[in-house]
Image (cartoon, rainbow, N blue to C red; front, side):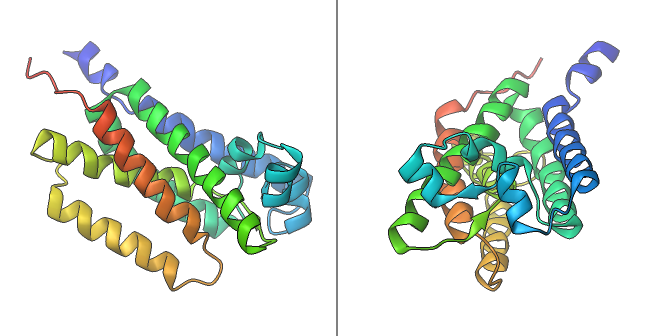
Length: 199
């Protein structure tokens, strides 16, 4: 019983939150996470670098960078609240795949979209991957015809709506990553769904 309880702990979610917080602390000691140039030098996403110069590592590194403490705390709170629910349903590996793949694809979409429209903003944050978790929960709920961690279809629709709305009304939010991350996560949730054991 105790072994099962330990196995059900959201290790991947905790590890991701810890990694984001640790990286933030290290960068704050080195400089300022509210300085765009400093963040760019340490892995934030710049569309022209990815599209024209092949700096594809930014698609991953930018997921672990945050512009200030409020940006970090808001994302980490949402990551833990929704992440631990999906991780318990999907398992550690599937959850980690959904998070990382959603985030990378959301950043890739952002890079090519920004390049196409001439947006020169520097982008960073875990929100594309977090929106991927929300999208995956929606896909999981549809496949299971039930709920994930007590969140049913109505609940996830409300969560998705307010998550997207909060980004639309903010001038600094990367809505391209939010919307695409949620869509990629939804598809991954449908693809990676597994029926949970009742044992």
